[in-house]
Length: 247
Image (cartoon, rainbow, N blue to C red; front, side, top):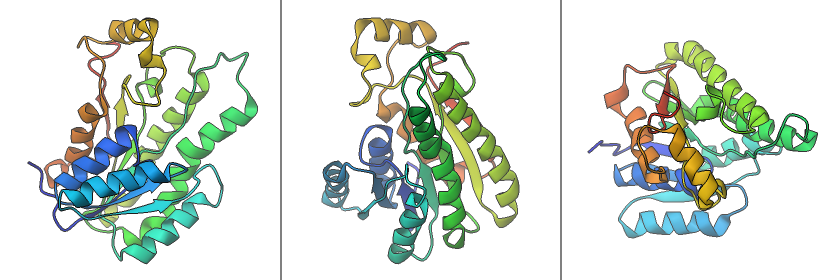
């Protein structure tokens, strides 16, 4: 199994779904995990308790990444906890389906703030803690490269995030910092209503060559690989973890 002993990781949106599974996976590999939450403090504390009960090290930090001050506040709290950050998993995100005609401005702005602005400025503020050997993974989406459902606005934010990853990888590579995107397809999480309906499940299965619905535990090991030394020659990539969707 991947060994991340002695490394410190930040997982944004680490209290549930893919973030929770990733936090637990990184901790199992030996990393100290800082679990970020927006509002779900109880769920974040539950993740930390699970990690500590298994003999690992973990902390919680809270910040609203929809707020323009959120990334700075989060980075400030990280700086109070650690002097170096080896792993950043920018998982926090928000979405929702809407036709072009019905898309609301406030919803669009919130998606852009959380999915694009927040990871950009969080990385900017964390640069003093990052260095040779550090790794950043931004969770994007199948929707960044394929048309699925009424997700035009959400897809635009995830496409922007993938472009950001390539530029970050180019500019930060000289400092020994790797930056990659991980693009899941449809994943069954506790907050995903889409996978809870027969129609939604049938649509998702129709996209994929592997005929089952993914779980967060299908995604987390790939994050763990990307931040490990086994992926030391991978940067600027977008890794599709989607069961062969839209082949």
